[in-house]
Each structure stands twice: as structure tokens, then as C-alpha cells.
Length: 337
Image 1: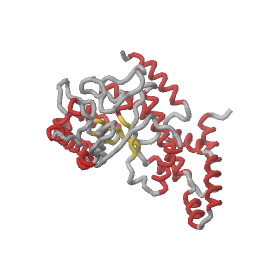
Image 2: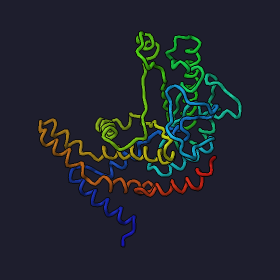
Image 3: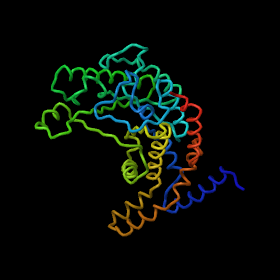
Image 4: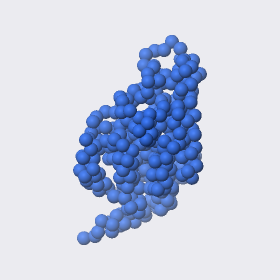
């Protein structure tokens, strides 16, 4: 009986030939994928709790469920992230919120945060060759009680959050400087009203950005469409891909692993598309051929290429990662009270 590695290699060689029939180079696709980092979000590991006070989430932030074993300290959160990263192919990034500052037992207000409050995270990332991304935290705070922060009509409230934003810009710059890779400083705010406002214009003049989040990323048509647009446009080198979900109803390390592996798998699917054949048919007005080709490639053996990619990256193939997570849950997570 052939060994698992031999079976993976054999299946890959068959898949490689099938993709080659469509003009697709699977080796080139995997090389491009290996150069594309995904930014994992720290808040999946502790239900977006942070390390400030342990108070209730506010500002429209809600974690569903109470699965045992969530991270309670920076050390536990980093250990959980290490475990997830060991199960995900490729070299990636880690995305922090300002509420994950390490304050040394002292309360530091958000408008007074400094890079030193994140030095532990910077050192951790440097040891692992990871990049860091960073987010100001505009929720779960008394000055966010009205759900208006940067767009607040109260100048004192607005100034607090502007100052917080400026602190976070400096922190992100220091992260990028120390790690030698640009740090994406992402801004998400909860500003808005649930009912029908009489004045839509003024808040929008105060604030003109908008962003939102979702559940654990699954490999559905929407995710594939996003990946296709990035790859078809040649934007892999320009787009920063970051995840945002937090599900407290399932194992948190598994959630990281599932979501990130799905994002990578969607990119691989797009990289294995015979885009030039599709474009040629479209440009020539051969819409019949384009549709036929789009449907035929849906059953090409992407799974064999994915397994080969995981094996080459030194991470578990198929569902083998789940056994590792369950062992980690038994040995580590279950002991957290």
C-alpha cells in the first residue's frame, strides 16, 4: 500500500496534467499563493474581549456562544495563535486591536497608548517572521456609549477618539519599522443609529469611511468571487487580505484554522483558473464557449493541488489538522477555567 505522501504526490501529478491541458501551471499557482499573506485577527482567540477590563462588549459587538478554553492572557492568546498558524499553509500576518495592549497592571487610557504597550506582540512577531497589522478600538468604552465616536457631535468625545486614532497611527508605524514590513492601520467604528435618523448628512461629513464583518469564513461563492477578482485583476501584490470574525460557539483555534485555510483555498482556486482562455472567448464574443469552459473547470481536481500545497508547506493535509486541534483542546484549552 502506498504511503500517504506517495498518494498525495500521485494525485497531484495527475491533477497537474489536467490543469496543463487548460494552459494552467500549477507550480506557478502555488508559488504565487506562498507569497500571499493573510492577516489573522487576534480577536477570534478571546471573543474580542481584549486585556483592558474584562467588561461587556458594546458598540454592536457581540460574540455568540461560550465554548470553553478562550484565551485570558496575552501569553495564552499568542500560544493559541501559534497553534493555528502551525496548521495553516504559508507565511502570514497577525492583526491586533488597541484593546490588546499589555499595560503591566496599570490602566492606560486609549488616547495615551504607546508602542511600548505592544512591544510583547512585536517581539513575538519578530521571532516568528510575522508581520503585524493594527486597529484602533472604538467600541466597548464609556466614551462610545452613544455609538458615535469619530462622528460624535460632542467635541470632547470626538477629540478623545481622534487622539486615540493618532496614537494608533504611531503604534502601527513603530510595528512596521521594527518588523521591516508595512503595518496596515485599519479603522472600523460602530458609529450609526438603528432607527431612522433625521440628519444623515452631518455624521457623514464628520466621518466618510465604512466597513463591516461576518462569521467564520466558509468556501462559498462569495469568497470565491472575491478571490477571483483579486487574481484576475493582477492585484495580489496590491491587496491586503485580512480576516474578521469571532465565533465563541466552536473551538476558537479551529475557527482561525477553518477560516484562514478557506481564504487560501479560494485564492488557489482563482490562481488555477484558465483566465486567459476565458478572456479570449469573451473578447471574441464566444459566450457559449466561455460558459462551457466556466462549468467544465468546476470539476477539475483542485483538492489534489491543495493537498500538495499543504504537504509542501509542512502543515496537515485534509482533516488531519482537526485531530491536532482536539488534542490541543484536551491538553491545554480544557484546563483553562
